[in-house]
Length: 366
Image (tube, rainbow, N blue to C red):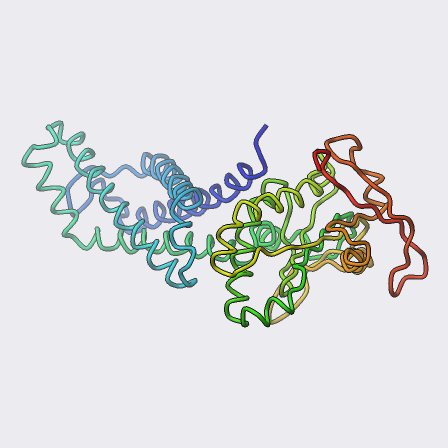
């Protein structure tokens, strides 16, 4: 079974392959239109075969796109995480283009060697290679490759900024018509945030928030959560019931976040003089999900479940606990799965006529 993080990485890599594949088909068709009935390339004299190119070029492009996507998702993007949106696109595009041009040189030398039935160091092989790379044809190919790279990088950065799941749903039009669905929500908030901000100052407090949200991201991804929104010092995470209830993912996510932040205790105390503590409220229920906005499109959730989850989180201080879960969600959790669930009785929530039963959850070793 693939982990949620692996699935997320794969779903991030695949669009690169699709973008490169589509561009390569367009390129092959444009090339055919420009060359017409010619059976050779004017710049090199090498044979031109439309049928072969229409089969080979997309396969090569798909492989290249998936390779670029893998490098981007698994390695390169983390080195540019502190750069601005435009800087990341430009810098990474230059790196990819340079690497691809180098690969094109190697590919062209080998292709010329194959066509001329000569060794790669043959005079004709290198004459044809130089003729191609100093010809307008190479410039046009390079510009075309650069445009593909820029489009794929733009997609990657937009996906990173608005969220992979949100972007895919927008492209698919999944929520163009509002839909009612069941969701689990976690509202997680930093304790004593106002006093911390006053002590650190707003700039340093913001820097701490950036570190905090960065450090908890892997825990959310690994437990199949979807970040719905950041609201100042509060983060809202959502799960479908299938993802959230499986192996108690939603509750395990909270403890994974605690572990992740705890591992960075030395960093926080060294840079900010404190280790951020936090509390969370959980609830499950029906919401209406849909696209909204004209100037700025967004997929939003509306429903009483969000207000209830937020108010449950607000009662953590009252009950002196870090985690509160509604009875509606506890009833669906896998009991005895590494957790100790303790009832805190019924309580009223502001704005709700009926009372709600609340529980706190502890890991068994606690």
